[in-house]
Image (cartoon, chains in turn purple, red):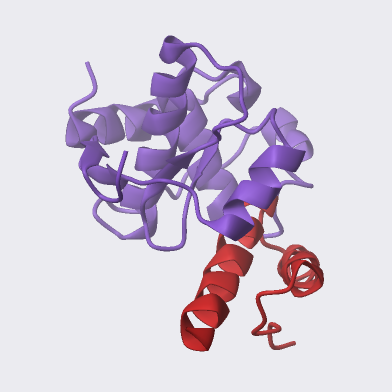
Amino acid sequence: MSDFDKAVYGVGLRDVYPGEDTYFKENPHVGGMAAEDDRIILNPYSKLSEKEKQAVMMNEAARVHMRRGMIEAPRYDLSPEQSKAFANYSKSLEDQRQTIAARLLSGDPSALQATPDQLEYVGKLRQFMGVK
Amino acid sequence: MPLVKSKSPAAFRKNIKAEVAAGKPVKQAVAIASAVKRGAMMKKK
């Protein structure tokens, strides 16, 4: 696959660059990431199924859309359980909100129990991205 | 602290650590460090 010849949910998908490859090789449990150029990259060393890869791409595409301001940033509160679970994820509450939204969208249970505000936001995100 | 603009693996790891220490999520830190490394590689060409 050459660079920039594929896109998912309106976000480009590209091959990994050397630094990314090093990280992925050392972390095969990581499915993929949203790169700094706002493209999605998948870990070539992960053993994910096609369905799981789709979920990773959906998650990362959501992050790119939120990061680029294509959809308004989430402003909801985190539940006490989420605050505790995501305290080490990032010092930024904005990052925590965005990862929870992306995980809820892609059906990742590590987002924990969603609040009504979070479900409302994810509904908007789902609609924006055309996720069925 | 400014990131190390080098293509070396040591600089790559140092940049990831610096970004994580600054509060960035690990994957975001990796993405940033990768972009810096790629920038350094492009410059050398």
